[in-house]
Length: 255
Image 1 (cartoon, rainbow, N blue to C red):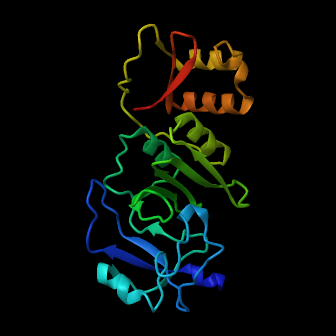
Image 2 (tube, rainbow, N blue to C red):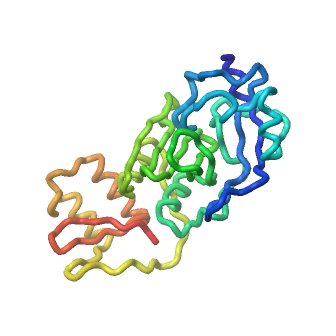
Image 3 (cartoon, rainbow, N blue to C red):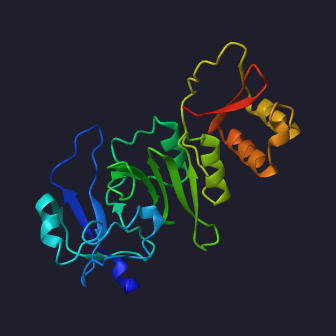
């Protein structure tokens, strides 16, 4: 397969929307004028899985079928590092900043969000957050979150899966260590959730002191890299720390 063919895309605007709360935006697929191959070995993991010809690619043979359910644009070139499948518009209206995880991703520059039909996952539509300038991507689905983050030196990507229970501090750690710093937009004073009896919120300075000294229940099991990320993010105000009745520290994303 000529790699230059991967740089041509067509935009599909679905005529019908699937049932449920999520509305997929217009999205782009590769246009292959020489035909959709039976297999594509270099299909990247950040775009799901190549499931065979005429499904996640468009060619002259299958173009009429795609046009039965969507308005298809003329083929156009895209930058080399553009994902195979991507949202054409910016943030989808269904992706609210009220969710702390989405706010973290937006703050790190992964701000083009939409529900896309990525193949190979159990979900019909997957929440995708792209960083258009760097080609980084996060996909949130029923198995957790997959992070495909460009390395700071431009030598490829790191693939990290977190889940099915998503730990916000692990997401923050992955973003920071790959050069995706989180910039927190100005926000009002947060209304933090109530804590169980015997637990208490800590100031950023008090939490940082406990982390640096290791004077908490899991302090001996921590690492310098993780502690450094937690200190940086506590200082930025992206997360708040609380100490549980048993002495463990827990971290709550900024509401």
